Length: 306
Image (tube, rainbow, N blue to C red):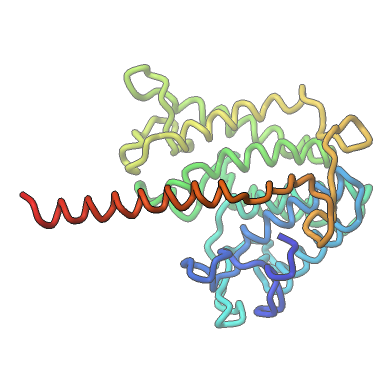
């Protein structure tokens, strides 16, 4: 993701939503693409203590801030904009996973920088805006679609679970947030469980936690997988106080990293391919002949015979 080819000059930088130019959305630079990059950079910076990752996280946050994908007053996190408009036509839809992925990332940067004030401010502001928008009455609520049953896309139906998990980890890497976050996660999880009363088992879960009653996923024309994932994540996130904080490579981590893995000449552990032999070429030729012959035979049979 840090490869120069991914960071063009449109909108003064930032990752596009899509990689192949032929994909719909290639002209869109959005928060989730850059938010995931920021989040990964922040976590790798803490894990490896390598400043290269932190620099990328810093740079990506600054880009998101400068293109106003993060509102400078309300700290609402918006979805994205198009390169042909220099990223000025901002789609101000607010999805909980955009805010959540940034919040977890800034918490890791707070931890990595040993409590640097700018990252603490960002943690505090994002918690405040996230709870205000997505946890009214301390219960998770997906703003763009939840007020209209059937309006949530399948991916939106899983966002609550991600945010619960990310918020729980925030309490580990920024421990001063525990008293604010954990009571809300607990109340939200209780509401989630309360509405898991559907189906033949009487334990199937729906999506609309605030209402206090089960709504069949068929209303949203989904399988119910996202709804079940949400509740599982909300409940399991409450175990965070019994879990150890994420390790680093100096506090028990066993993963070896290579920050230059994408650079030329780096040893990535890739095994060289065996040289192609005459026998290989002969075998490939025979298989090609059989494939072409079989395809032609099938075509003739379909075309000429009843």
